[in-house]
Length: 398
Image (cartoon, rainbow, N blue to C red):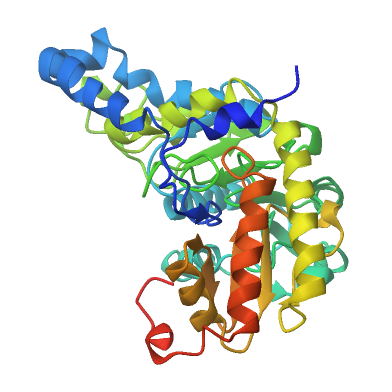
């Protein structure tokens, strides 16, 4: 059955006077998010108290939610666990990959990777005094740079700035040929693109849930460990819930089995409840349909801006199969332009040095929204409404 995006749009709580094109940074809440959280607080937490860990099975949420996310990223059952932050999950994945003892001594990444992933790699090498090199190349150079020197290939599938999309299958296959382990950051893929981890034979993957999964600010992240690696993978952060018997409270750490060993601390149950409210929507749509509709919306936006806003330089790939669900344009006064757009009810965001980004999530954005956003953009550009001092004062969060 084809996905009904008119129906899903009605399930999101977005102000009527706002066209929200920033779901690639933070997804909006669903109409039932607050109700679910309030119900949980009043009917579960308040009445069950600590009994809820058993009677309401709170303790099972990290794996249960992980299995729901697994269906969206083409992963095997019991291969994904939810909790903690994306930076922590990246650290875990990178440490586990290195501990699998691949042949090389190079962690290969690209200049389009999210900086936090690179910082994590730098910090891990320094803190553990490893004889590894973090090698950063241009995105188009990655394939040729996968040599026998490479131990770990650490990439974000979709570039957070340009929306350039790596070929996961091709790069993973090349990495394995050279004896390397792969880690894929799916922050800008999960929930809007048809990801196929199992088909690509990926080793590890990480991702957040506050973007296209609409889990809320700071909602818990996830880690994927391929079943073939679970027995030998080590958790760098040996928290109590990664223990085989956490409630025995022994002094010596004994890792749990399977994906459970990647747990660290107590799960964020209220945040998980908000995430579950959004994941319910994915039960009535097909992730492939989301990808197809995203292409239609982005293609329309590209065509119209090319015709009417030549001052905006598209830096995202023109080929729809080589990009994610957001578009990035370069403009000299990009920050001021975006602030002006926000003032006029079109919310996107800005990335240094001069990029404006627009995200297109078909779950709550349709062609009519895009057309209205374009009208506002054309008017602002034609009349240079962005060129005012108040739009050039930068806030901390851009």
